[in-house]
Length: 264
Image 1 (cartoon, helix red, strand yellow):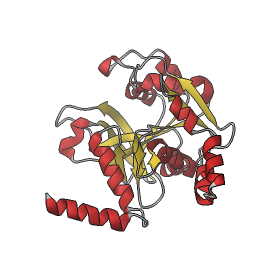
Image 2: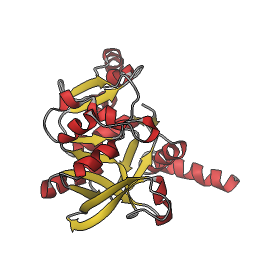
Image 3: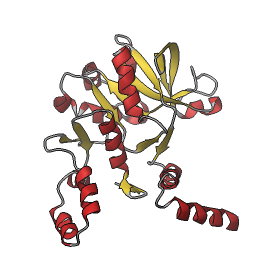
């Protein structure tokens, strides 16, 4: 719920999904996260205040951020047992159909179509499971989940392997997983009996590795920038990048940064 410029991080992720054509949103939350549910609800007091003050532009913006009734579901992950477990908690709502998974602390910035829109375009071409990937410096591959690269498919390629934070010099490529997935429902059955892995948590990567034995995976090569807003530097850089993209505040922000850098 931290804001990047003037919008909560989670709103950027929802906007990316909406652009891609996603129609129903499932939020897996935990204890003391009710503020997320409240955010995606009608704010009667705020709307009344805006109406009384004739803030039509603000009212239009507020209405545009509100999902349609019945298109949002919430479920709880009672214990913090990892990403794989969080995904499994949504199984009854998702049902037996493919689903998109967007990690809400990762926001994407690109010149063209959004990351998830590109993934859905690739899915229409290849089917199976899709993972968004970006390139990193080869000597930094040990910091990420890395995929092996096979034949080219559209704006991506077949994934031949996956490894979480490989030892230096052993990575199969320099393509790292950036927090966006399209997965088939069979992954739920795998996660149901998945043993705990790294960090004593149920890891999604472990589940995907098992699914890779029976189903195809493709990597969508995202040619933009991902900001990890769960890290201090990523959150700061996201604010800078999105602020400089805004015509209404760029001049002031740009001049401020120039003055700040000059003073250091």
